[in-house]
Structure formats: structure tokens, C-alpha cells
Length: 196
Image 1 (cartoon, rainbow, N blue to C red):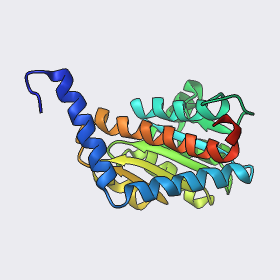
Image 2: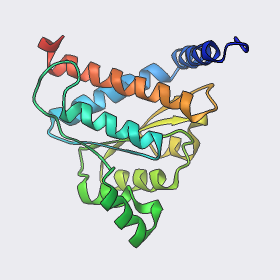
Image 3: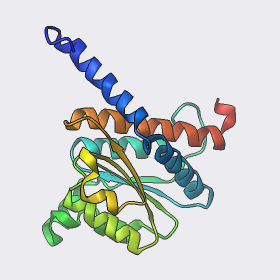
């Protein structure tokens, strides 16, 4: 890497992370499983739910707004919700503890046949672990966009997508947002082929 040029070095590190992801035997098959699960959820009238902490919360919100708004071209709105409302997060955290902020929203809004997409760069966020447990108890399929080997979440999600190689949250999240965009595009191509 180009140690004398930190900008170029960062791009090279990003490229290496993407190459490692492409070389991982489970990565692309599990992204395809994510596509199939999202398409099937929407086809049967289910909702796409999403959550994460910090930058991963931003990715969860980004994922939801692409469905309710517009991605490539105009089409009808699709049901997607990020668990990001500050009043709900702080109410649940105050009353039940921060570990419950997503699980309570799964309980309130999730139904069998929905899809929960969670992002955790460590795979060990307690509130994501609780949300995965709550979702599985309700017949909700869980996708985990994870890093650092997948952590404890890797065994609690139905579709684990683990970013290899990267050790920092920023590099892991860069792949997560790429995966989210690719899944949205793949589903849209099926549902709204005229947009492509």
C-alpha cells in the first residue's frame, strides 16, 4: 500500500476488502439469498425492517428510504421501516434498557413473513442479538450484515453476510452499503423491469 499517500492507501485498502469479499465462498451466495428473501417478502406483502448502531443505523435508515422513496426510477412505494425514531429509541431505552431498543420494535411492528436486516460491524451488539432472538421467535427471517468473523450474531441470523479481512468499522460498513444497494437493485430489476 502507498504509505506516503494516505488517500491512495485508503482506496487500496477498500479495494482489497472488496476483493476478499468476492473471494469468500459464502459471500455472493448469501447476497443472492438476501435478494431472494427481500423479493419474496415484498411479493407476499411483508415489510422490510432494519436496524443497527451508529453508522450502521445510518445504513439501516438508508436501506429503508430507498424502498419507500426512489432508487433508480419512479415506482410505487414499498414497505420498509428503520428502527430509528429517537422518541421510541429513548423511551424503550429508558423503560427497558438499551439492549431492548430493537427487540421491542420487532415485537410491535414485525409479523411472520417480514424480513429483518441488521447491521453490526462486530456481530456482538447486545441490542442486535436481542432483536434477532425476538424476530426468530415471531417467524421473521433475519439477515445479518456483519464483520470481524460475524461474532455471536452469525449463529442467530438466517442469512449471514460477513465482510472478511477488514478490521475497522468504516471498511466493513463500506461493503455493507454496497451489498444493500446491490440487493435493492436486484429486487427492483425483477419488480420494475421498465426502470432498467
